[in-house]
Length: 151
Image (cartoon, rainbow, N blue to C red; front, side, top):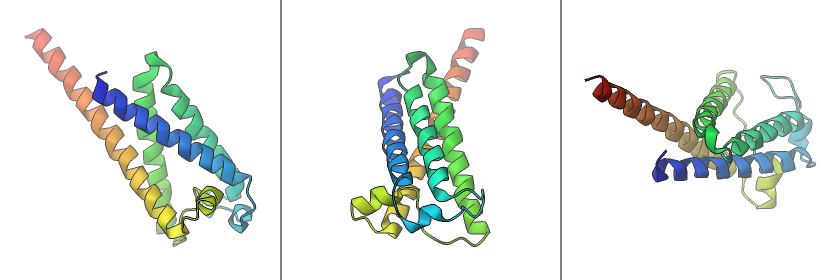
């Protein structure tokens, strides 16, 4: 993969590391929301945040295995699609609270909940659009290379 794509993947790994650590840190906080059950999955938010944070750290770790760059990119695309589906599902059921995905971490930085929620939507858009557009670009490159080799 070229340097631009590798830089993009590194930014994905950095984001997943930061958000993963933030979620795990928040899971051990004392915010009231942590004791509330998630309306979709039924898990208390503290457990959901811990699992989500651990998954994000695991996926970020894939970046550091050079032979797994493509797997890392597919994983980022998958995770961002799952998060988008989760957020849309919350809206569909009438849950209009700001995402507590950065919980205590945002509080510690004195970031209002709505602002943190907006930032996380922007991050989600970056991961989603960046990963899928890169996968599309790589697919076109492979297709073009295979077409020129068969001609």
